[in-house]
Length: 463
Ligand SMILES: Cc1cc2nc3c(=O)[nH]c(=O)nc-3n(C[C@H](O)[C@H](O)[C@H](O)COP(=O)(O)OP(=O)(O)OC[C@H]3O[C@@H](n4cnc5c(N)ncnc54)[C@H](O)[C@@H]3O)c2cc1C
Image 1: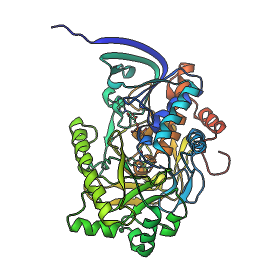
Image 2 (image 1 turned 60 degrees about the vertical axis):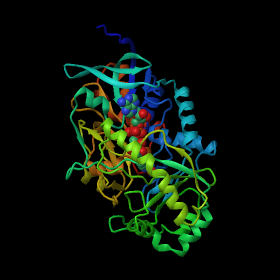
Image 3 (image 1 turned 180 degrees about the horizontal axis):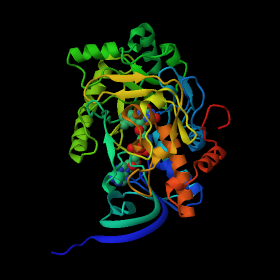
Image 4 (image 1 turned 90 degrees about the vertical axis):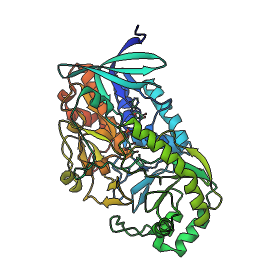
């Protein structure tokens, strides 16, 4: 028997693995800082979950102050120019909503990586790592019948699932401490033919449809009037109707509310409703089950909405996201870990590289509820939470950084993931260019550079 694997080698200064919110931030910031940067993704486009119809949540904190700026803001500014976003709007439920056109997001991200000189390596699945004396040497990717061994000075795991850290043997946590449950995945899809005015009239007549269970307290102001006032909104509600339809056996989904995102395209909304329970997003068998089950829920869900909800009578399926959206898998243990107390109390340490301000939002992995908890104020995400404690030269970006499961309910949102990435990318570039390890980089230098690019690191008006 002969082994016919073809393998090439490639070397770069900074290698970012995964091109979602965390990876985009890291790769662009590293390249902007002058480091030769390669960005790997398994898809033929960049953006990960930023391309599946979701809104960017919590650019603003609960008080309406902007807490994420820098590169994430630059991306939104470009979307606004292209009529692909209405910008940020304060929201009593989500802090703020920034609805975006997912197709334009793909184009804007390619514009940006090209502008800053990131080299994308797409259609590549990460399949292995080589580690010597606890130090990451290379990451192996595979595409089109060929393996490429990628060497780098600094590696950034931005796969969402922490695949690189996992393969390299880093310690990690997964799920809630109490029961190991992870938040459920959702297959996003969009529909056209939605009649906003008609639905708003229905909500005005039925304000009880905007009230939530005890686990989902909202601040006053989340009313039909608020939603009607701007196309830049995310709807969460219909609890009464959905509960009744579930009791009558007419509802195909395991959740108690409907969430839609009003897209910047008239009559189009993205539905964030499907929920696959008792799921493990790190297993291919589970991902396969999830894709099948969730695709098969789409048509019954559309039928239910058409038959029972005013404004939805003429909706039609217009697109299905290219992959199941995975909310939660591994969190890789870093040199620091951000814990519930610090986040809930709104502590912003001196080595903060990004602010988080989104509410704690934990979707049940086994039931129909969602736990919502507010914060005292924005909290700091520290540089040490983005450096693997076990594997040298490995940094983390996006949702797999070192936080506990409660903080994860907040830090996982996309503006925060991009902002974390921006700090990580600067740290990685400095380490690579100065031939030092990421932990040897002076955090105040990173913070200074972040401020120069418009990032927000404190609420005192000085960035
Ligand atoms: C259903 C759902 C609803 C959500 N709602 C919101 C919301 O409304 N607003 C909000 O701001 N946030 C929301 N979130 C959270 C947010 O989308 C994610 O936490 C965030 O996108 C994580 O960013 P990331 O870069 O870490 O991961 P991702 O966006 O998942 O990006 C990871 C990238 O790595 C690539 N990749 C992964 N593994 C490999 C591999 N082995 N080989 C090659 N490439 C790989 C993927 O293709 C992907 O491009 C939601 C999440 C889900 C799933």
